[in-house]
Length: 113
Image 1 (cartoon, one colour):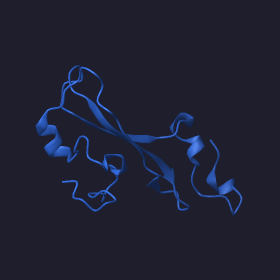
Image 2 (cartoon, rainbow, N blue to C red; image 1 turned 90 degrees about the vertical axis):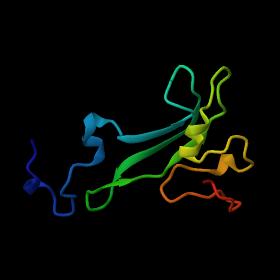
Image 3 (cartoon, one colour; image 1 turned 30 degrees about the vertical axis):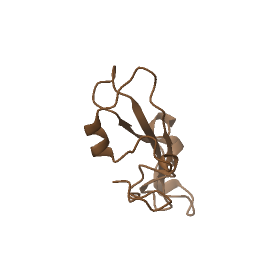
């Protein structure tokens, strides 16, 4: 194990992300579904946020990637799940919604919830 005291003065005092998590990039994934039964209910939205290190070595969220997914044929959507998620199927701005914190309106300013 390398002693941090032996590192050059301008080197960060923490291990870079490539040396953590066995070399894998940590990512938080969130999904919105049309219910709790994975055999019957549709997947409606998926988002992923990579976890990055800032200059001080703290974990910070990276750029959010998200997608709205057309329900697969044969799947159903429980109306109660739409009440919870605020997703409106077929809404003209559905492609612009995001699961990122603080986003509760689409770009046309209609209320998502």
